[in-house]
Length: 452
Image 1 (tube, rainbow, N blue to C red):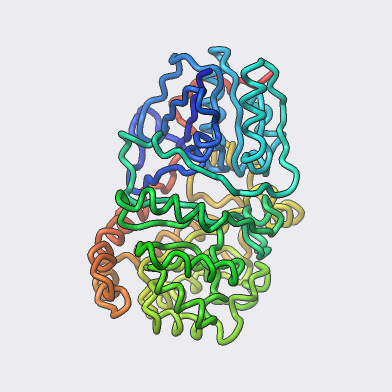
Image 2: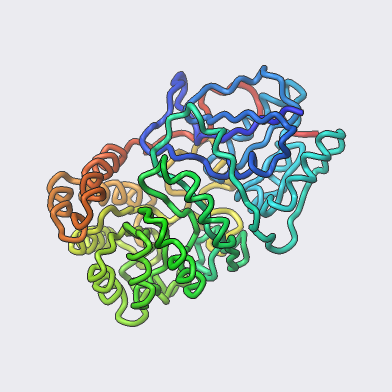
């Protein structure tokens, strides 16, 4: 049996075969599926971001992991295989959020996590009896998970090792697709499994990114993991909720285990916005100032993320937020507009309030990357889009980069200081690169072919 795994890109401009190359990391879901596939199956992998898909190459089954932003392109790819009578199975976040839509363009849909379902999919495909839907009930155990990174050989990815230690998050932020898909729960891999994976590839990677949605969702489990990670002497970064920054034991273990920085979703400086997001925990025990002071004392770098478009945001919110990020010398920061992902509480609220500008923005030919798919309360959609771009330009000005680069925390580690300027220069180059980018390949001709 021949299995082809494809990682779709967001899209391409008409007549342009190239793709944006700034932030191409190894797509871990593809390696996870390859690792779950029986050894007697011949596996090929193609990354649509960096290579042409050989549609005429023999394949018995095609597997595509779909995100909302890549859905249109995924359906185009599936249509190309459908013309060749090759069955396509789709999974991923968008398949769990919109299973009926995805099912229109795939012979089979995996809804939920694939760990306990994938062997059945492969067996059914072998015998020509693919089910229309494979639905995971509850959360499967992650023990024995073994991503097959051999599929990445010969491809040019950023030299960062992506490892999953846990999946999901206990918080219930209104806008978050993660809590929608996983029901505000988290599962974690056995620590020994994670350590073996890290040890296996640490000679190839100088920095690891634990891709957990929130590595600190369960503080006690996180501390146990950090204690076990200390002897491996690796550098790593991950995503964390800000409440963990008030726990001294956690901060000590964080640093001793090799943490170089954490991505924290600050989201907004407005307490009422945070309340509307269901993220009031951001303001606990002294709020941002207290948490940032604790992180600074332990020399932990911060990647701060902010979103704009909640009802109390105005054009003045952007300059205040950029000033805040500069004042605290954040290593990097993101200033993004609010995105109503399908299936989330936010999407349903905007739908009820009549504020969505498209029936399904991710499929609408009028929609482009960075466009605003809803009507904000405090400014126009165009103004929100423009202000986000201006905020990024202000934060990634050369003056800001140089000043933040000489901050004591940002230069506390030689490796991270050396890479500070490269990373910030990449973000500076990326500020408007995706603005107006199409979803799906604009050169695609003909209709999307529905599955039978």
